[in-house]
Image (cartoon, rainbow, N blue to C red; front, side, top):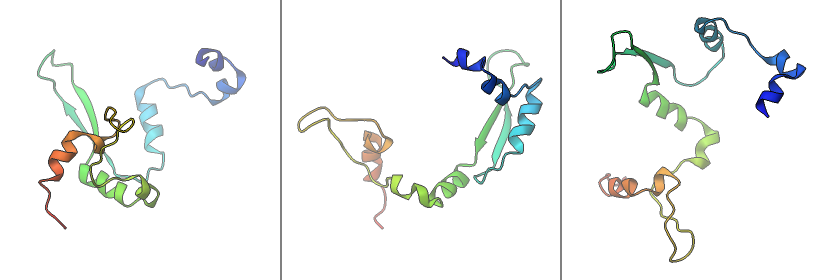
Length: 114
């Protein structure tokens, strides 16, 4: 379906043609982004040849956390304590969120009380 859509006149009018990665990077840099700044670091893997350098893009974790906590639209979606859910009473436990995992339960008992 994607391939068929790519050949329609509407799709062709919206497609960008980039000749190099620098033009994509320039376009992305011009997009307004209110969140934490992206940082970059060239990483040399411990294996492979010297030409195998990799560009690592990341956010400062504290900036990212501050940004997330400052968003009122996310307030209802944040979880601050572990929880357990089951498919049904006596049924198997669900593990589809980080807060439902055993790690949160083990870590939560070591946190200071507020």
